[in-house]
Amino acid sequence: MKNKIEELKLFLRSKGQEHLLNGFDSLKTDQQKELVREISTIDWTLLEEIPLERSGEVTPIAPMTLKEIKLRSAEFEKEGVRLLREGSVAAVMLAGGQGTRLGSSAPKGTYDLGITKPVYIFECQIKNLLEVTEKYGVRVPLLIMTSEGNDGMTRRFLKEHAYFGYPEEDIYFFQQDMAPCTDLNGKILLDDKCGIAFSPNGNGGWFSSMRRAGLVETVKARGVKWFNVFSVDNVLQRIADPVFVGATALSGNDSGAKAVKKTSPEERVGVLCNRGGRPDIIEYYELDERMANLRDQEGELLYGSGVILNYLFRLSALEEIASQKIPVHRAKKKVPYFDGEKVITPETENAYKYETLILDLIHLLNGCLPFEVEREREFAPVKNRTGTDSVDTARELLKKNGMEL
Ligand code: UTP
Image (cartoon, rainbow, N blue to C red; front, side):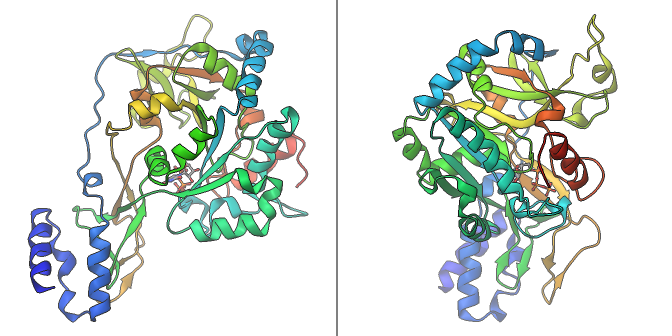
């Protein structure tokens, strides 16, 4: 054990993280073992922030508009339903986030939006998917990505609610990987005497985590060729929407992204564009004022297709890019940490979380169909308790769409 610890010390020194063993000698044997085990699970590549490899000229990308979609909707729907009947489409719910803005430690999907009766976020999502499976008489595997902190609660909650009527044999869970949090100087934080402060590694790792869990093979055996990946928190989400599936497949692209027309140049959503001949998404903070205000002859914003985290990915294309690295983003957050004596809950942002983002996958693929959807019918994200994108706004939109709360 002694030699092993010396080796570990040297290794940590080479990474600038030797402080992790500062209190090691005062720990009990089982705590020492636990700390060594936790350190061994660290994915070091995540901390070596990979620079964004973004080169090439940025140009606008014209979305397939609501008008165009309406004109061809019968053709798209027919193709989408054919693919659904073949069992080609799986749904992937990204539910590994911590939902810090909502301010509840429970999984976001368990949040109750009801007023006179319970209406859970998970229930809304499953209801939306059931609308498709029941209407067309098809089966769609539903893969739910959780993370270490919410996995048990998510599984228990859905089981207790009988999966809100979804067939249990079509539901699969997998856990995403975790990344260590660091202080603002890049030093990894402990969350107690013998534990690393880990957080989920972002939604960009969904495919690699699913693959590691063996589920890519499982769904391939069921004939899946497309994944419809969506966030847990947009309660008006259309999932496995045959028109979207058909339009993306017929377009020949490797991916499709549902998008809403931005309400103003300043709206804080990522927008679709071309960069160096490839599809890409520019985050709102990267879009300068001049670009944000550019308009076409009809007065529409040229960078005006805001993504809503509802994507289609061709499985074979994801397999081709699986070995490629995607950038790691660093976000400042408040993270409780162990200071050597006690756990401190910070009042201000004291740490970095390291995350990969699903939108970076799009840039690696050979084409993305920007598919416009009606905001009022398909976009009601629950990010905050009140204000924009909140419980209040989502309730209003659900009611407008005929849901009793
Ligand atoms: P957000 O970026 O809104 O993060 O996630 P969040 O964790 O839900 O909320 P905040 O920022 O802490 O308030 C968008 C979607 O990606 C999922 C979330 O569950 C949500 O569906 N996600 C995010 C993951 O699955 N894993 C992650 O590591 C991060």
